[in-house]
Image (cartoon, rainbow, N blue to C red; front, side, top):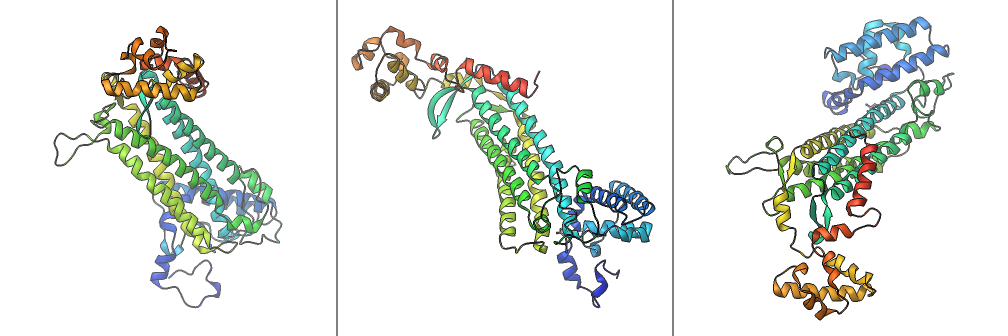
Length: 460
Ligand code: ARG
């Protein structure tokens, strides 16, 4: 058995079960790039500070380049007995270049090393997720443009409420996604500080330059407190919280589209490229991707829960428990990325069933609130107009008709305020036209919002 890098004080060796139980290389090898980037910056700093010679630095940098290539070629041998990504790379470097490699871990601990790697990894992951969010926003905007002017029933309590433009509804998801991206970027700003040089927990007496490494690695500055630097994973919690909120947004969109693809709604048709069939029922065409988007949101929330519980009982500074932060982090990022990608593809591969929507649109008295507003415009207090329109609706229910089918006589029988111009306010098309408040579903308001988003997202 190879001696451990930390083996000086030990006489015996760990059991195989303990070795298997403690290793993290099987998953933290995903951090190899960040680990190498961090080691390069650290070696440069050590040489600048006179803690290693320029030639030692150069052989370390050269060795790290070679190791990176070997890893990327899939030829690196990851060894479980070397525990984690950090010691695998350091030991491989020692195998390759000998003595100079032994200086690399000067004024460094795996405690500050690992958390530096994770921060660098999160930074990249956030950029990728934000880019994917933008692609979905673009797909939603385009879907709206393809269906310009399409009025759909708006629901509250899943009961018919008021008519809205499909574009307006799609923009509501675009807005949510914008906040999701904003949360990610806020998180990135807050995590972008460098733990390197905190060493095990207390810092070091060696003359290192933490500002140099921080700057080399593109951080905003070194973390102020060495204990804090190795202790906390709050940035991962924050990131996974942001992922969870995004996942919940996507899950709600998934739920809506799954409902809409049903025979009962029949609002949208997913193309074959985003549908799957049944192994027993020959007629089935299921919107599985969006069901799985809904389903996978559970994983993302679960990953956040794992990390919250992981952190709750830890005394300050590094504890080995923290090794368990990586799998939920990786899983959350991988899952949210896939959810975003598939939702985007789904949005690009559905059509709206205009004829069906048109046909079912008159049901449900979607114009009732517009009618109440009509009476307000005529000077009636809203509570009274609510009551009056309620009676009009009751009459429709009794006669099995729409509000627009009531005669002026019938309406005036309920309130003498009704005049001929009331028909301008009835029917879903008329009703939608009346919306004019900022952010409302009125066509002019939606058009204004659309031009904002089209230029913000640079859609041509
Ligand atoms: N593999 C460890 C982790 O992921 C690295 C840090 C281990 N530090 C230590 N002193 N055992 O957290």
